[in-house]
Image (cartoon, rainbow, N blue to C red; front, side, top):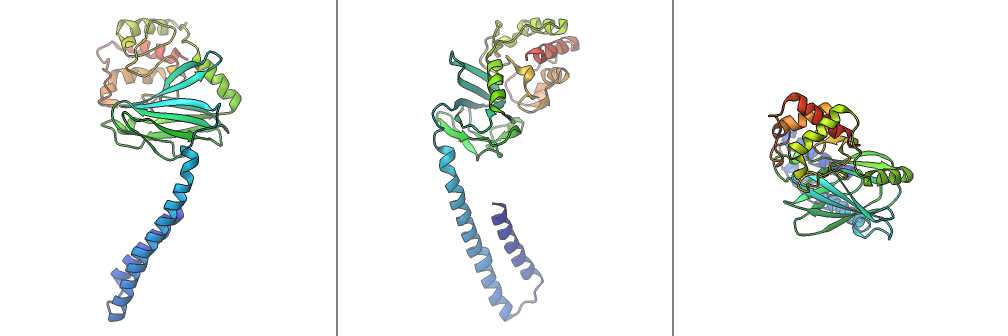
Length: 288
């Protein structure tokens, strides 16, 4: 793709330079017409047609179903975060939900089932596959096959509203054994915090109605409007890539949400004392 774009760019720049600096003559006018036809019409048509054929040949493996027994993951795009459901986890076939992170085993196929809850989104992890639109009322599919471990960045590639640019996705590719261990840990309920500040934060979490929108498995918080926070402290970022995952950043997120990520639908808590915000941040960080 880069080579094709470079060829077209060089041709167009060459035509532009010739037209700008060459003295006009009858011969140069004829040559100019051939340059425009050849370099401005024929060359781009041929190069883009070849690139299109090359790209279309890559699509069937991505769109076809993954082999039987592959991990099945449902990803739902919402304004402005990713809801990720791991289907059929463990012997009891439990469903595990997290947000804004996708964990995959290296060297294995994963089947994604893509949905949108509100407006059109587009799932795109450039290092793994092309874009796939997520359309309300429709289900689309994408097969992933990571070939190396590491942390990759994904984005929403379709403008979906004010905070579209703050809708990042982290994709973490593990070795198979490490992935299986992570998945088992993720399926467990949240552990009760031991730190006094985190314990206080858990009480504030309930008192301020956070559980009406968020789920923390193993507690009385069973909300389904916002992201699942059961193990939010183990995630790499806060707010779909908006902030680093640190207690102080959690407190900043709660106090300045309306400025950091407008129109998310979640109220900010700047009215709370700074001590309470720090306690809430400690509690969220403790949800490992």
